[in-house]
Length: 89
Image (cartoon, rainbow, N blue to C red; front, top):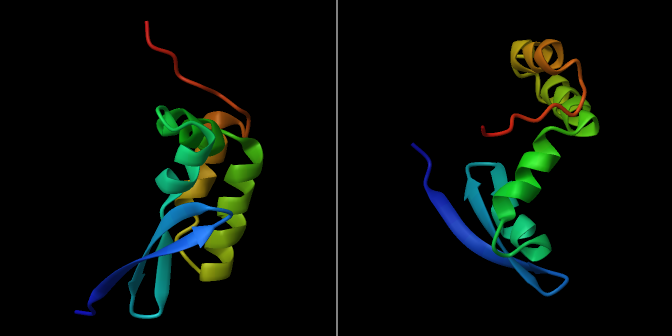
């Protein structure tokens, strides 16, 4: 099992956590979202995840990485590739 290395990079004055494992790097979306809304970074990520362009981007990324595309296809069917949001209440 490869060891995970945690580091921080600075992007336009924002500290962003990076996890590196083997040849893969993972950046923290939460750290980036906190720059936009420090107290509600979850809203920033929710809005990004329901965006049609994001769904299309993830589909392209999966094809490039040769991952299982079934997840994205299901998301497109469920959302109609539109910005659908579930509200409490």
